[in-house]
Length: 180
Image (tube, rainbow, N blue to C red; front, side, top):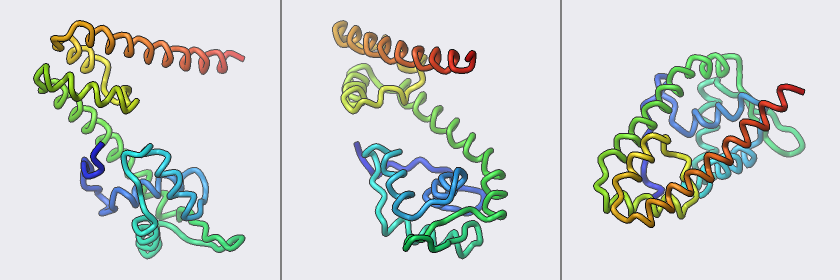
């Protein structure tokens, strides 16, 4: 998968996408730089590999803007959100929602526009990468229905069925946990 594709809308606070992701991570608790870096790498699962040369300048910039503070503990610099940073993140909730909706519509529009042969190629790559869940269900089913290869259609539909069963088990597990 290309690591050059970027679909970030400009943030109202003039934060870079990296700065926004860092601040979101710091909502839970203070973290040190390598912890932030590792978390981002795990979150992007190989589709993007953030480097220390990206993370640390972003941390320094956030500190200059007074959105975060740093504190040395156990020979590690821990970063935490300031009151101003928390307020900024609260204000950014609309941006995050709009960003997610934009990307969902972008994916839906892209998939709906693909010719059948190209759909087959794209879906094979998505399937092989293990990230089938990124495409909204109605969009993926419409695209699968346009495929000409019946065996491939069946394989994709069976994969969707396995994914949905796994999702349903997760939902059932969480519902049961609420009942106890």
